[in-house]
Amino acid sequence: MVFMIHERTRGFTMGVDELDALIGEIVSPYTILIEGHPGAGKTTLGSSICYHNALRGKKCLYVSFYEDKDKLYSYMDKLGIRLTEAESKGLLRFLKLPVSMDIDSIIDSLNKVILEGFQVVVIDSITIILESLKENVEKRAWLLNYFYQLSSLVNGLIVLISELPYGEERSSLSSAEFMADAIFILKHRIEDKYLVRLLEIRKIRGAPIHVAEIPFTIVEDKGILLRVQPKLEEIHESLEEIDLPCKVLREKLRHLHRGFLVNILYPPDAVYGSDTLVFVLALAVKHDLKMLLLSYITSPNVLRDSLVSSVAKMGLTKELAEKIVDEYVVFRAVNPFAYSLVELAMKEDEIVNSIDPDIVVFHGVHVPMGTNNIDLYFKELYRQMLYYKTRNKIVIRIGSCINDSSCNLHSSIADATIKITRVIKEDKITTLIYAYRRFVEPEAITSSELDDCLRECLNFIRVKAVELYSRN
Image (cartoon, rainbow, N blue to C red):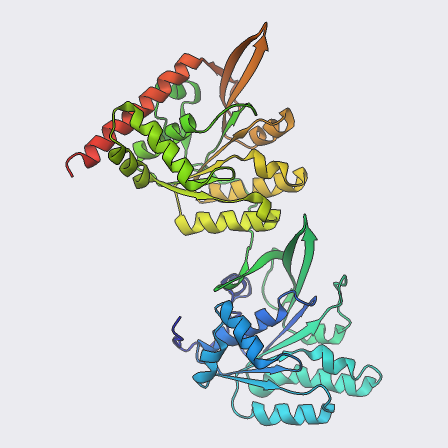
């Protein structure tokens, strides 16, 4: 990455787009207090603020009482925070002060360096020097007042970093919290053996905040990524009508809309997926929609090969089948056991946002449901589906009906559901298929009608593939 100084701006940045959107423009003088548990990401956030303001041409002074410069620069470089490059451009200075220095010497050293014209000052951390004054109340108060005046002294942005002991979420620096314009608490907890990071917004002067706690991750080459959940107070209207690709589904479900959530549920012992994916592909081809197929149980290559094989059944060459599949479908796979619930939702949103499809297909949805607390899972699922609805995406969730409660949970928030069940009676297996929309009684679909639907979809895909590629 090449260090490029952006056009100079009057305001300052947090170095995290989502925080900038919440806070609004930061105008000097401004003081930010970052508190948090050890290892929660305080230094990363402080470094990010320093670096991204340097990108704006604002000189930053990073003061540390314990960080080794080379180690800090090396670690931040892995996160895409290029402190070395900022320093080489004369926009960053790292100053390490020994803890053994007395307070007066520390302040004298700071004052001399600050006079060099720094507009951003990060002090990591004030806890160390304040702890040394625990018994000297008067000196401690004087030091806090110094920090309070510092933003006016430099006419810029001051970032104060403070430690919170493990398990505690309330700082002993009550006066420091009072003087700050914005306060962020970085926390982490263990959830199902995974580390969950949370950023609590305790205070932002002059900005209306609708969310108090935001999940975040620290990602290689990207630094801090926040997942700010939009405040969805209303249910978004479903928009454009989408015609279904076969006769029986048009009769039973009539049509879909952009923003619809559709569930397709199979018995737990069924071999499922290929027929359903043909139907979704036909829907995408019919309306020229981009589709993301995100599986929890099958690799992208296996899913692609399966869909190509199904499409080629109607007389298409493998080459044409591959072309039509690759034209409309992007395949991804995620192991839900590798993430906490919060991180899994962030990963899903990251994939969806990067591809920006019209149709999002979640394949094997029974797996993440079975790995998480059902109440938390349902709340997160509902929020996510409402979010995709606001973006007018058709969401199709395919999975096994592990038990009635899981099926009912999925169906309760769906706009349309296709449910396949099996009944064993007198050693005979009967397949029952039901299709229903919200507020409409379920209607039965016979196996032969479903087979006809599959053939109709495959034929439509074949005709479209020949039309698009046979001349090439």
